[in-house]
Length: 197
Image (cartoon, rainbow, N blue to C red; front, top):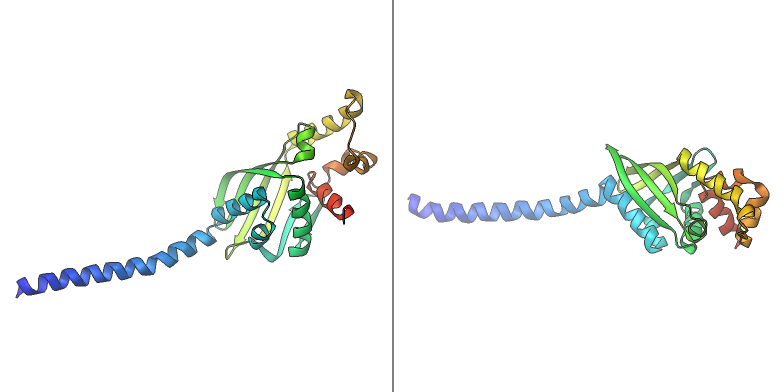
């Protein structure tokens, strides 16, 4: 009797294993889509690729991008306008994950674009992102003191080195260094985008 049941048991075991694998695959895909680090990395990839729709799709409709302590962009419309300004300047961002605590990712990030690269500056910040159901709900940036000092020094040196500021920097020069620091330079990009409309 055991001779006849062994093949049946093997077939049943194979069938059950196959069924378990089929059930696990969607769960694995779902886990990957909602994994906070995967979501944050995908957001950075979309920004670097200039894919505004893919970028926005990773933010909740009522998401907040906060640039401490100078302002925030709330909701898809504001975030789109801000991100389009970054992408027009060939923004490039790098990410180093420092810590993951549940659905909160803390990372060090480096931002540059055509204008900042022309000045030899890379903006460095510590970023904290909250991810819920595969969407970023809060994205907070805090620039490093070293970056603030570098921006201030570069702006102070512009007239002395004979470099001519492009027209896009003219409003910033009028506002002074604080205007640049407001928003870690990113708020400035939003204002520039608004002026171009």
